[in-house]
Image (cartoon, rainbow, N blue to C red; front, side):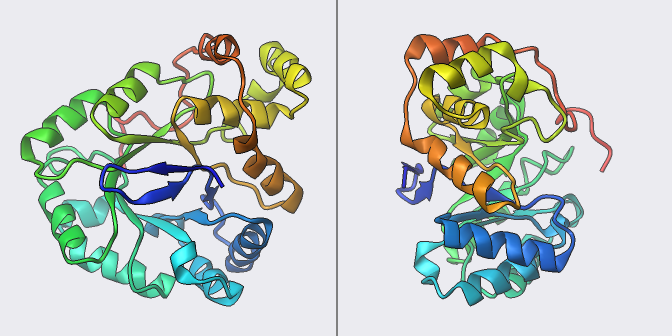
Length: 273
């Protein structure tokens, strides 16, 4: 399985399973069980998704060694505002039934707290509660402010990223700083026509891959971790196999040029939650 090495030496599978909007415990459980049976070893959840317990049960019941599964969860905004970092990760750890989290992420750059909260993130890393720490939805200016406070740079920046929101400048900046970019909504979050875009369908025919594999492969070739969501075994396998081929650089660039700076999720500079 394709992996990336984070800035602290921890290895992370390049393709993970996202479980956003899987609020039904049975559906979340079965989705994760199916993914682990299919070959996934990277599961991405969050406190606010409300499915950490189901994810934890699926991991435990899979029979797969804990060390083989990379588990990501996230610090929600309310806990960030209250400074309850230690308490939040402990709650997540217990719900997930794990001794440690592999990657713990600050979910959003909450105004007035996102830089100073990082000291507490560093503390939970030093205590061994997580193997790596990072952020989500941070723009360049958020990262610059964080660097002023940080003794340890984030290992990951998880951002919305699909071809109509290519984020090339931010990705280049992250890679330059040793931060691994990670894409949420990498297939357009079910709100985009990207998989029927003529450029994507033509490249799918050229490489004998599905449109989804082309879009995921584009991000992977740019050095971006992808965490597509799917509950179906066939789609899960299809997404996982996106790491098994490479496109010509000119074709990767063609996809990047589809950029419209079109967000489907919240704006990191203007959100109200």
